[in-house]
Length: 314
Length: 272
Image (cartoon, each protein chain N blue to C red):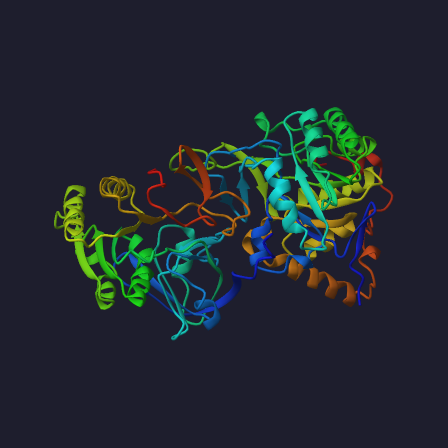
């Protein structure tokens, strides 16, 4: 028996596989038993009602996809009334993803969703669509610190900060989130991207630009997960392009304590189950009795900080 | 409070029994499928197909495709499709014995209310594929069905023999014969209404037909249902990419084609 359980700053997960926000909902319960997952992570909600972006909201690029959904949300009332009770059927911890346009609005929502049945709050300080030109709190250390401080004051629940690849200051942003009281980092959200139909000359997304996700994002998010694990002492949850058990293992070796699986679920809705089984088999074949023995075991030698935290290709 | 939902959709590889052209434009894909999945299928539902890589193209996302036929007794699941892009080109490459990974059945099906005795199906082109299983359902329920089938040319009319074999009255309208214009379609439908043969309309695919049916429906108080398409990613309701606007009461709402649809109240649909 391999012990797959992990500990995210005091929150125990039975395995390190969970969905990425926006690629999971109650609807998936019609495809497999959601109790098998390490955690349940909701689609990001906002305080008020939001319609979302114009269609087309997704397009595919070679081996990956772009999305610009725009966080349609029924608001916090509907969420607490309908969504939280649904997940009460499961023992699996519920992680609620939230976002806000201003730090104060964000903090108010953070307080409002701190209700029984919610195990942790993932704060989406990185969504590239919610503010103009993809600007988000997690692009800069100062705005990250400011919003995280207010969020920290708004709840006693574990706070997971979801970071963005749309920054040149990954390790500084990670440290700012840690200093302001984040309990874990989710690394990372999608990267701002674009695609154009050469026949119509129109952008393929209704919102012009959107977030890249899928296998082509993985090396970028993996690099960031590694840097964040090195830069901070709080758990890192790897997220970006995971579609095989080898991808999961790679993130864990890089220093992630758990991973989130997103776009791959669109292609294979039951893939998270295969990843849990595949991880157990791999650890067993390696003679490892606990997944914890794999986390952060990357052999990176004695490197200068300037190398570990580089923000440009050498 | 509702309980945890039961498993309703399945992801599994099915083997190809045949994949042949039915005319110059369309092909019929027949998959061998387990009885328990076919038993769950309903007219108007769809499967989300993981198209294989073919000819150097790699379709990334699944492609939604409405069920053309489901036959639990024969163990067959049918799809009718036209090759239009990377996904359908890949489907066309499937040969006998190849495997195709499918996810489904998905979405809300057509419904036939108890007091809808005379059904009128109006479709053009590949829209007929989506409406074909409705004819089977109408036949099972002993309802009378008139199938108005429109196409560019008589050679591209599909499913007319199929509809006739299920006891439907088939009316064909084609561009080539100059009978498919909206004025003529309206006359045909008004004729059916006058004869007491139209309790409900079923349609899909054509914007102009939708507008006409909404006008006629409003004029006579006749309800209807429409199957709609939209680009999809997840196909099961998680990603909110496939929304379309609908009129509901005095406001406009966005609904997911994969989840609240693909079959919607015809009067709520908004022409595009």
